[in-house]
Image 1: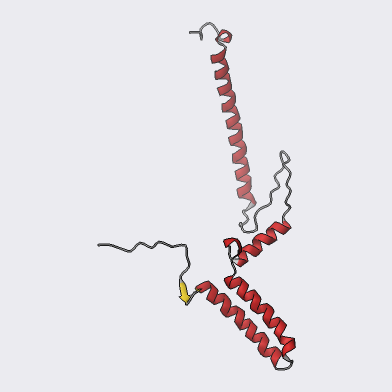
Image 2 (image 1 turned 135 degrees about the vertical axis):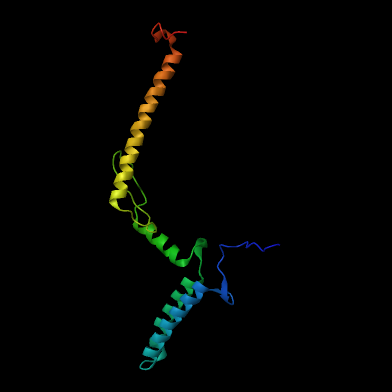
Length: 154
């Protein structure tokens, strides 16, 4: 018995024509807001007054639904751009400082987990330092056998 194995599982399915479900939802919400603006403003004002807000909302809707700069969705692109503009670009390393700049897309962790991680890293660093000292002593003994006690010489 042979089965078809899906090849492009990362690609979103097309629901209506060339539109995916996410694009269809974004367009539906955006154009519903657009229609609401049109109906409220067109009753009392001439077309010059309501055309600008309607066009702005339509352009934003189309951008969020269809524009993919740098192969990212438009919303992720905006978030990354804001992160680039707000977070300092030049960073300085200061020994012992624990200040970091987390990404805007990453979830923040609780301080207790961070404290436990810091303690574990400190313990690991001490263990590595002790092991390194032991290895250094062993290597120094092998290089200089005259420094060994008489019972340790071969």
